[in-house]
Picture 1: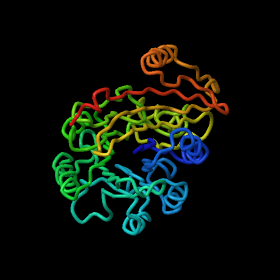
Picture 2 (picture 1 turned 135 degrees about the vertical axis):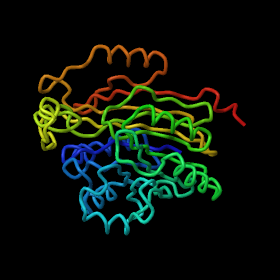
Picture 3 (picture 1 turned 90 degrees about the horizontal axis):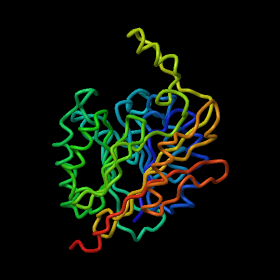
Picture 4 (picture 1 turned 90 degrees about the vertical axis):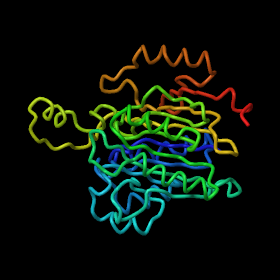
Length: 314
């Protein structure tokens, strides 16, 4: 089973990049399931019913959210009516919607179902219920129901909190992948219990803003400590950040590959970081992963980790 997860979609630039490049990713990776984080999809804050419908029409199986879940209050009804739109499981009891969805592959209905769980961290974010205990309740219930393939989106600020959740779920979940920071991390790996892990998948949206937002507003906040409005950066090149995980029949990860599609890499003064280039060349030498493979004006960089002992595990 192959799962494609695409990082935080930021505003119209992110939505356009997704609609344009998702067919390329599907053609290249042939995923059985596609998940996106959509909490910034509506002009950087929340999501709307129309965007949810558009994403599902693209063949996306599940949409996860985070701390911007309720920024568009019109989503209250949609999140109740559409089980494939998730909000974090650790919102207080009685909150509309659900934080877990179990879906069947439209590509191959004979494959086992995939459970997708959305949880939010508490470090530097609103103090929701304990994510560890919430995950215990949900993941243990799924296992008792016979669900072996469990994907967890940890929407959190602190890398330590994400890593802690990863180790806490190793051997129970199939994959723990972080969202929220909009910056892809370089720590894709398979933990000893057979779980794929990545601290943050990154974002899909404008590259030349600050986390997808106009630079001026963000800089003003840092320089003055006064309130300033953040707007999506609408111009220039875009990126799409993703991770692909292969799972065996028992729900254990056999490979994890993180990647970024970068549009117009040299536009508006953006240049390829030589350290990154050297890193990817080094990765390529070890894993034979595609490096800077240009397709249709795009630069695709990937980094692959595999579990060499997967076949030996009982």
